[in-house]
Image 1 (cartoon, rainbow, N blue to C red):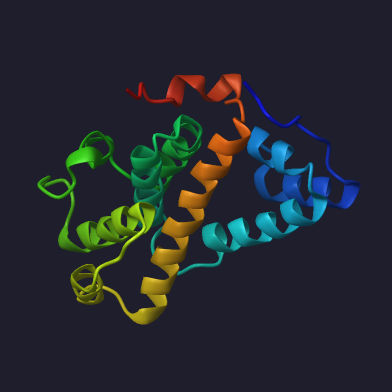
Image 2 (cartoon, rainbow, N blue to C red):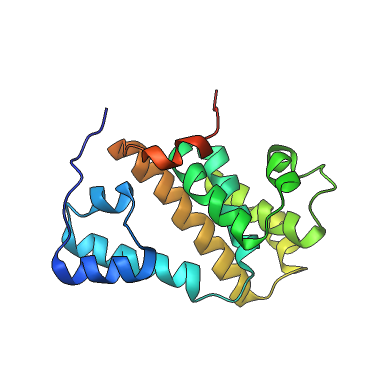
Length: 177
């Protein structure tokens, strides 16, 4: 059961959100109960989506993997469409739960997915860091780690507030155990 109401936005923020995302999703409407927080969240999320240099498909793989680990149907449903639009292949999506062994991912993608797993689970080992740094520089490491961390937070916030999935996204929600 939903724990916070879906609120309206202050006019300036509503205009900003619509310019960025179109109709704001329920997560943003739930966060609108705290106007300063949703304003900061919006700009941070926009930076992660549009102010980065790692490929969008790679970041969407990280987000989907984090959603999978967190069992976040909402996050998965929203980012599945974005991942496909960014060029993530359906074969990769299907193999995401076995990415370590899957031939669907190259070594660079596997290094990024290792960040997603480690950050989501709360511990990035020195071994994981060394492997990741074979494929990325410090700028990209920070970008990928922050992306994984932000979306781990998103799944936890969604769970805490029990934000309802919009009807138009229900067909994209996974059947999680």
